[in-house]
Image (cartoon, rainbow, N blue to C red; front, side, top):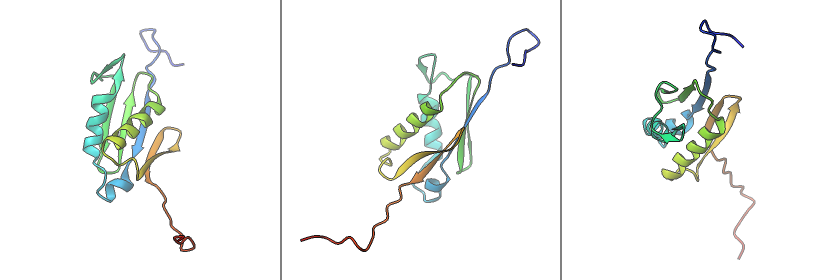
Length: 122
């Protein structure tokens, strides 16, 4: 580990990216509302809405949202909050959260393909 000048260990940075470009391009997903939802719901030391300097949330246009933290935060917790936002906005039936890499998630539409072979049975 890298030691700081004062003898303390350097604060570890955790950076997670949530890519919502596919639903946003269809006009289904609102990035600003999602950013506000995360800002209001992420808990720090058991309290919501008190991110302080520990957690920064930034939105890059209509493509992705970046959560940078100096305190330990779980990637799984961000997935949980994303799913909660989708459920609240009745989008959970059409959009799923998929891990695209070690530190990022991607929102994708479910692949619903109907085959012409399946017909109604009387």
